[in-house]
Image 1 (cartoon, protein in one colour):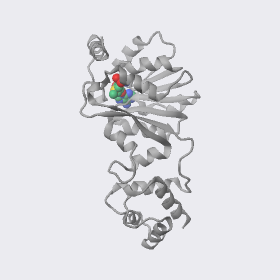
Image 2: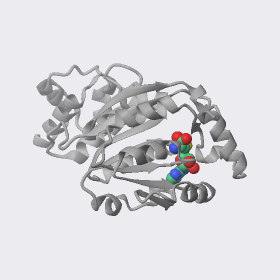
Image 3: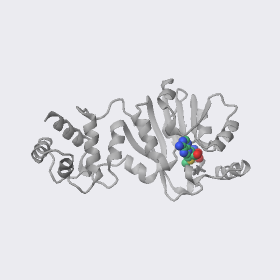
Image 4: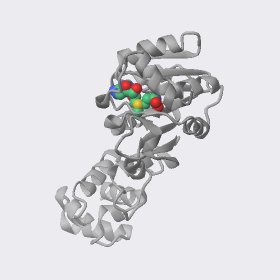
Length: 278
Ligand code: SAM
């Protein structure tokens, strides 16, 4: 039986149906699961946090290579199935809860090497990623399947339409990379969009040195909330005097007519630090 047949069989046998509202699109290609595990570089030293194990196809492979897998699943019916499926594994732990409500700091704080590996529920991709990053957990990397469009935004470079506030947040905390392209036919049920697997290697220190981190993120938010505005107009909208804006942009070597999408993370760093000094 291949994974597609097995997935359909297990759902039927257990009286389950993929729940669209919970973003349940199960991976049915074993090769892609192997590739995710390979790209995640999980070893026997690592504790893996898997968000949304579903029927456990990825979990089963992770259990073979990791020291321990802590799976967080919101769906009680799937949880009952998973408990049975992995009852003989002493390196499997299941938390039946909404991942956004789990105290991840406490959970991950007990271990030395922690990696996140998951095929994420797409309806809450960004809140999950931001929780993982902003709570400053001691993670080494996050290897996750996301909607292609979202993955492209995470890994975008300046001057394109994908580049935005989320790109800069990701860059502040990680070194991001798209590692696998996954067409939609590899899921059951088939979703409307293609996917990619992104690997976010967590940085020990941010790539920017800031006098005022809050101001740096305020500038990014202001810059991208109206993408068509020039950076000069965005700064003016933040209540900064025209003369000061002119001076700051001149000092950091940026033309007044540039937009947020044209600025690198270091341009935002320079503007923020210059404004703090003035
Ligand atoms: N890992 C499985 C696979 O690859 O076949 C299933 C992935 S499926 C895209 C997303 C999984 O996340 C589902 O099992 C779903 O029930 C679970 N999920 C959805 N919302 C969740 C939440 N808030 N917290 C934890 N798990 C959630």
